[in-house]
Image (cartoon, rainbow, N blue to C red; front, side, top):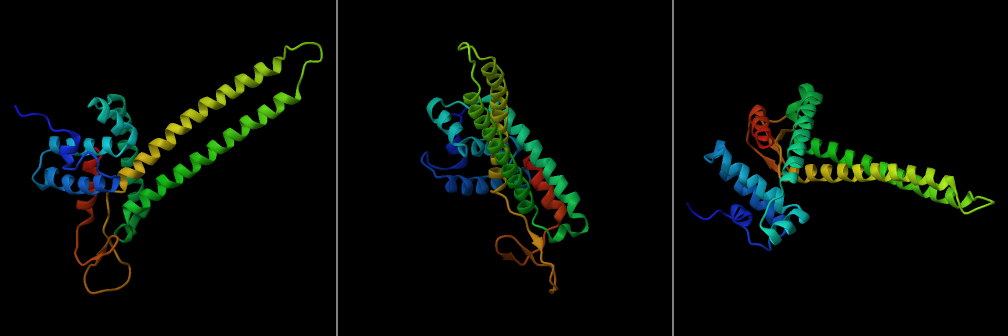
Length: 224
């Protein structure tokens, strides 16, 4: 049995590869290892995991230091994949009869970006609430001793708020990772203007046609 390839070898990149180089390598290798392109499901999953680890600075640093991939993060990634799949189908359902004219990936990125913005807004409100309690703490004193029962009340409430902040931080991190995963994909869509024959476009324009069911199938295979 040959030596197991490193995550860098799986993506065919150097250990000092930049984020952009990793992204390009993943696009190339995911096409090469995809079951529909002659690869195997095992090879494709290894490629996907390699990118997910190396695209995350914390996980990449841990892998570089220990050579190990944390199992807990794999569970988080499964959650992220599930959320991406849910947004994918919701985007299709909302598009209804205009699905051919919509850049599905772009619309999905908008959903996650909106979620990130909302979560960050909540973070700001929670931190503001803590500041309000701290100001209030200074205003209430015990005239007869140093004991202050309101300190206990405020500390308890701030503790709960900090828990909410930690949970919200995890949400922001998860949504950002989902957005990053989507950024290596592109979706062809048909221009709404009249033209001779189907014209599909991504960042540029491609004069070719691909059945949308095939696009959906290939995208979903990546996250199930």
